[in-house]
Length: 500
Image 1 (cartoon, helix red, strand yellow):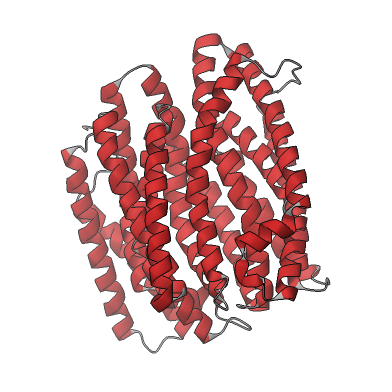
Image 2 (cartoon, helix red, strand yellow; image 1 turned 120 degrees about the vertical axis):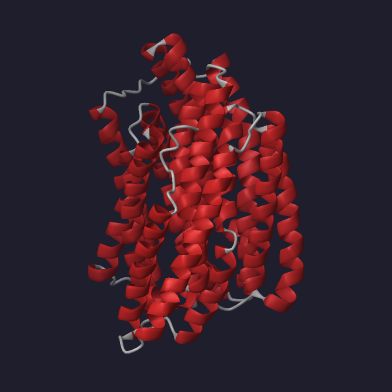
């Protein structure tokens, strides 16, 4: 239950952020639809976000949190924070260098990452401008993520979970009251960098509040920091491969008008359950498993793993089915207005249907990767990521000829399921993971409850067609939610897993 409570804390912060994020996306969709300006901003913003995921929330957090936790238990608080201070200074120097190089080389970066814009000079030029405005966001949010890793070690998960809310709220305010620049893309770009500074100040406040003070160390290069950055390299490579998949998708999508926008909004829907379930549980799971691996408590490791999977599947199975069967209705409810047309809704819904089939795999990949990272085993996830990237590229190359932008989504889910299956097999071989028999029983219950949920939604729809369209969709979601909970209660679903 400690794992569940901590995960719920992260999920609460993430849910609040995503709710404001959806409001932001609704406003952007209404103002820009699937226009070239929207494609340009999404391409620019994703650049900083991808690098942040690779370096800060990816490699650094994955390696630093277990090392920091181990140092706290073994060497005490003073030496642990000495280590954190040294890593902190190296991170600032590295991120500053990356930011300067990125600003200078931005035309070349966009030239190679969005080749579909090469024959559209105005779109190319404005994408470079948006990217230069938003790129320093990488420095701010990466440092904020590092501070979040420090606080997470002390089970202070909420501050960093809430941090993205700042971006969404400030963007909404900017779009509603200060959208007087040449394009809405300019407004979005400026709001992004201002939000990055505010998120950084937010995390500094909580570091000081919880007495997690970092000093400025002159001797920042030590055997211990060298070891940390050495361990980061394979994870950077692994995360880089994962996000290279995203850039390959952008490269392909840049050739299809509106393709970037369609996939972006479908992914935004998928990212809600992925963040609430996979990221939240993975964030909590990393320090818990790192501690168990350090104590060499194999029985406890297996119990923690099965509990995490049980909680995740309780949420992800109904979410996946609901997104598949209600894709068109959800996109219509959230985005179809003003410049976001019915055609945009239908195209985005098609992508969402495909991605929803991969949602369980995406969540499980996050959980199973966490198991390896907690054990400081980075080689296997790297090899698997490289293999899955190759599959993704091949499928995307072939599918784009017939399925266009939908082929990118199909390639993502196939590579996602292969990634999960490979991680599952190697978890059994290398770190002794075993599914508890009760986990399988719970999975059957979740599937049965989810099927009843979909049936209830369709029955409700048959008898409530007199309701206004958007009101009908909202009522369907509510009916489905309570039907699933009721079915789980009838099937005696066990989330506590006390006897596992």
